[in-house]
Image (cartoon, rainbow, N blue to C red; front, side, top):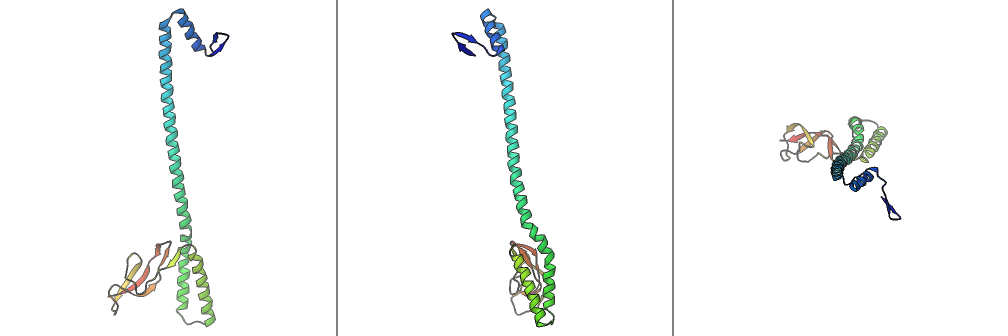
Amino acid sequence: MTNTDDTIQYDDSETKRMKEDIDEGDEESVDGKVRKLKADLKQAQELQKEYLDGWQRAKADYLNYKKDEGKRFREIAENAPRSIIEECIMVLDSFDLALKYEIQKEVRQGIIMIQSQLKDVFQKYGFEEMKTAGEKFNTEFHESLGEEESDMESGTVIEEVQKGYSLNGRVIRPARVKIAK
């Protein structure tokens, strides 16, 4: 509606027709149109609420998705080295086995250097060799291969048969040990 030179002009044709009906004294027609407009307004408000609720649910779903994806990517990043390291543990075992035998001094030093380099690379990713000798037996970190008579306290690790390893504080292979009776 615009007001120029005391003349009212209506931009909306529906509003203009209502003005004409009022001028003609047809209040029944005006009441019907007002009811229709109120119904249309109520319908528009319900639709607006439905769209707003849908948008809010979609936004919440998106935020949950982002959080879940972030967690999934962190897990992938943490576990990527794990699978490689788990496969390479056999290589470390082979180095340990080779060092048990009588070999030339130069060859022994070379094996120790390579083994050390490999462990250093793994340590950058949180890889650690578990300590066992003299420790109290713990099923979380150790796997018992038997008990033997010993002067040590019962339940103490007396021999490490196979090394155990952890990655970022999680056991990836328990140490295989013999414990005191």
